[in-house]
Every structure is written in C-alpha cells, then in structure tokens.
Length: 133
Image 1 (cartoon, rainbow, N blue to C red):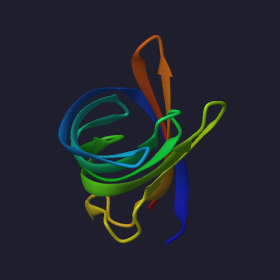
Image 2: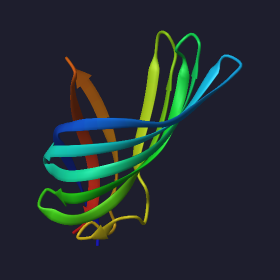
Image 3: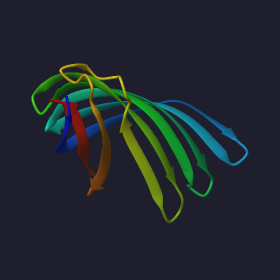
C-alpha cells in the first residue's frame, strides 16, 4: 500500500543528565542520557543516548539514538530516531531521521524526519512522516 505524508507538531520537555566527560587536547567528549516528554500530535516519552564532541571555541557535533514510545496522531507504538548535529560559531545543522524498520505496534513502516525549534526556552517539533495506509 502507498504511504501518505503527514505532519505532527507540538512541544516537548527535555531532561539532560551528564554521564561522563573527557577532555583531550582542546576537545571535550561528553556522554549524556536524555529523557523527553512530547505533547501535541505526538503524545510520547522518549529516552536518548547521546555522544558529543565540543571544541574550546564552542564548535562541535553530537550523535544520538532516541527511543520514542507513545501515540502519533492516535496510532500507538514506538519508533527510533537518529540525531546527527554539527555547529560552528555562526551556523548549525541538525538532521533527525526515523530509523527504517524500527517502527512497532501501529507505527510499523514509519518513515520521516523531525525538525526542532527552540523559542524563548521552549522546545517545538515538526515531524514530517509517512505510514502505510
């Protein structure tokens, strides 16, 4: 069956817990666990395993795997997101992608990408996704 494109929007809260940090030369390597609570079209909780590398000037990168469990537009299940982000003093790039084949429950076959915006300290998400009809 052909997938149809949908958009989920809402807010989320983040709890970041540092698990370790090493400095090698001018680079700080960090490991974090993150818990999120999503509200809106995605009503869910997630856990994130994150690794980062940051230079003394603030440039750096992070990668993460996020396990999401809840309901997406009323469909119950779970899925996995992969994060890949970089930043410099003047720019940043962030890609968040649903991992193929990792949807479960009513979210089997989920594909998509998420964007995050932070406005005055509040986190917003836009999730462009598709599911089998």
